Image 1 (cartoon, rainbow, N blue to C red):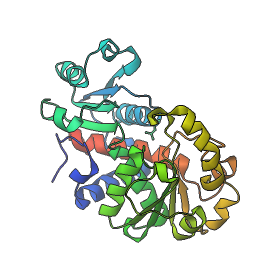
Image 2 (image 1 turned 90 degrees about the vertical axis):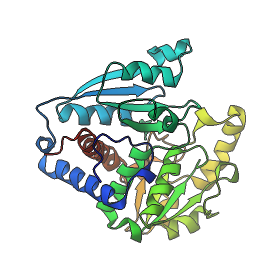
Image 3 (image 1 turned 60 degrees about the vertical axis):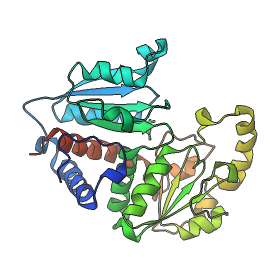
Length: 300
Ligand code: CP
């Protein structure tokens, strides 16, 4: 079934066929260029970012502009949410301006799934609290497929602050639905009910993909406790020159960004041939461009 006119609020809404179609279109944009999705009837894309973002907001904007669309951006710090306006009322207000799609990041307790029903425009979840970040999961799956082949053959290890990571939530959901094995590795207080591998050495020897995660300081209730936990985290779970020796030569290292050099990863990781961090960023533009083309019905 086509994604035209549909919202994307989580990865569970997508069938494997829809994901294959999306990735094939992203492949075509990557190899043939943007003309295949470039439109002569520009649509209006509304970017609503009520939490900070570099990669997600800029990659959606780059994809929209390269596809010939127009973009209007709302930055949370300058929006009327700072005067008490709710997410629902913000989105109803923007929806009344008749954009063709709303791309929304927020960290409120309101759920896009409840709000979506009240809007007459497709909504893309660009990161919602800790509950999900479906387009990140899609670009990560695309990057794994490009580097390692079938997702169903992979053993994917999330290392770090899994509990506060919407990337881990959506990633585990999507990768498992595509047949991969997933596991997490990190301090008990930052783990979830997902399969846990206690030692980093054991986890890295097991993994074909290592997705390391930032400590999400902004979501931790006690900043002093988080700072104390950081030194222990670095000694046990940091990906560095020594720990990377446990990772097999064909495995890859990923990070959704933003990363903190010297905390969860070191410079050695960034210069390692197995590192795919910049490829993830580049692929984010192709995958989000393909998604916009499918939702807006602009596939050539
Ligand atoms: N990975 C990710 O969502 O990065 P940004 O917060 O910079 O968008």
